[in-house]
Length: 82
Image (tube, rainbow, N blue to C red; front, side, top):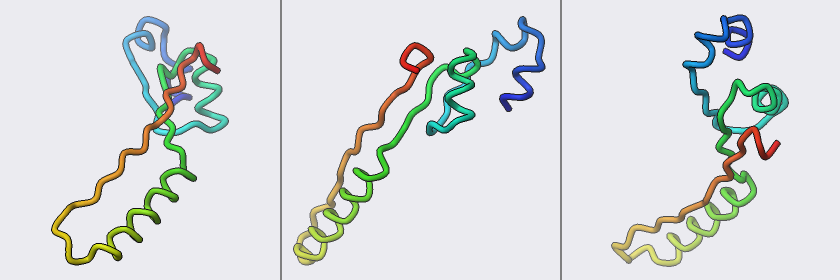
């Protein structure tokens, strides 16, 4: 997708807005080039920790009808923050 944007004429490329789901070398490069508007990065360690804690809590309260939910915030990376 980034290769296609790089090869597209500027007037067409400027009409496209890209948001990625994570950050990696190619995403970082796309951010610095202005091809990607933002990357939404989920903290893998925190997600794993919350999952395990929620599973343990669910086992400890098996008889409870309560639904356990956790919110893990994500980091928004923009071209300005790279």
